[in-house]
Image 1 (spheres, rainbow, N blue to C red):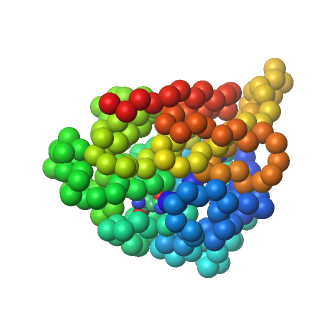
Image 2: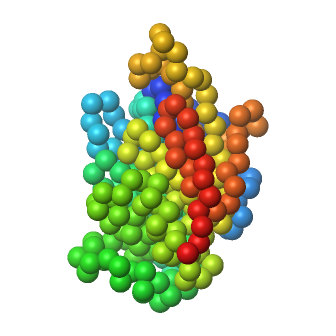
Length: 259
Ligand code: GLN
């Protein structure tokens, strides 16, 4: 199982979100503290972030471990962002290796990550995959379970479903086919939707909106992460089988029912 994280808030260097926290995503690539499956996350990593004035995010992905990439260290130090989604990967059996299988997956203004696995992939999921038109199956970003989950979510988003509904629908469509683990994370740079379904998930909000501080560099921030990046206060665990919806003004969590 991989580890992933999304952030919305005032502009900060990427390094501050991923590398500086003592137990943050960078360290989680070799020493996650609460990962339920797998041990290390060295089969690739990716960061997607939003620059001011451009609703389509940039992505930086690599096939190897995050700590071995000196270019990432430079980038993380100088690039500042108000919205980001990042993941470190532990590939599960049967899934492709390489950069194209590393999250975040992207389409237009969306960034997506899957922390989990579809045991019995791919045979056991042919019925779920049949919900997609052939052209969308041929356009899978990688030969991996996560790319199929992303294609199902994107299909719903393109049909006009709100992000939370698109995630919950994918969980419901896939959970019935076996012991699927489906912690999903989705952002468009202004809101975050996430599911907890088989592994840990936490959120932390900081600050509140004030009359003098409603601009993009003021107001609250929200982090949604597989596990806390530090031992500070404010991390709230998300119950398993839940859907989380967040923006800079708050977080809502609801149960998801299996169908
Ligand atoms: N199963 C996915 C992959 O192989 C996600 C991996 C994970 O969560 N460890 O990429």
